[in-house]
Image (cartoon, rainbow, N blue to C red; front, side, top):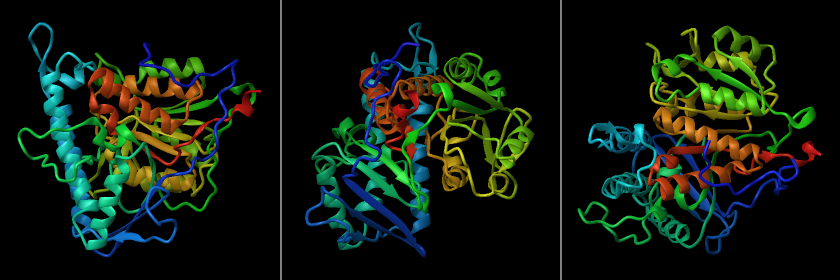
Length: 416
């Protein structure tokens, strides 16, 4: 596989040593208060702040309407990126971002797509941080200033609202009218392009950013997959290349049926360092989220919770590859993702929308190559978002979110 670039490499078989937890420069807490929401922000970058919680406000938009606005942001990305039509070199129509990762030769399309995404991301930013009481407007103004002053390390904590933070857009000039036909936008305004971001939940257990392989320094990867996705997308199979990759660099355990997953989770036989999901998900007739593996049988959130008994001992990195047809991305974070994080998963990574299988495959291979070569997870997500945008003129890297684990890395002591 051709790498976009490489910034972290293993030296003499030993990953680099990192501080366990870097200091976050911006903290944002979002909590539900009945029908409304409270937003609080503090950090080194705010004047006269600290943990005194001076910057706190309430958005005017009701909580359920904010959730609807988040869904609308995802829908705008689907319309403008996933469903975007183009032409191939022979002049035949194609779905541009589904069938061609490199868009560098199509600047007009990039310009129009970027503006629509900036508008959508800014609308949600406005609802969260500007459209509310006077204290919220002060918070939003300070946040805008800080976001454009330097690269920030941002931690958002909320058990209630799961925002695609990397897809938010904040223009440097708060007076700019992005709805104007000739509005100017810049990649720097997208949070995921300019900053390191993680979303965390309330969690009592102590977090450890170090992933420790077993004897011989070989990681264990659990692949929770539906092989039928490769049949659905024969031109760009999202599973087979990852099977080959993980088998070459890790010890792989396959979980392709409901019974296998149930047995491993309920019997505490899940010893994964990496848990890789690539499967179908949807809602059943009672509006319960479920996913299916190769046998097509529904697996509910409540079943996962029951099998785990509240404890995921191995603390794995959970990677969700929500490719088109899988319908896994947005459903996972507020249902299965919460269960896994609360049970002790180290972190959760995945796209906020159902991305094309070609991107799903390329991104996962790039991500795990860099992680196994010694990179920190938050840095990898940040680097890939920028490289897809800068090199390929492709915004899909900005769809990937990180839940906890910004500093997660391989423990160099395990390789000595």
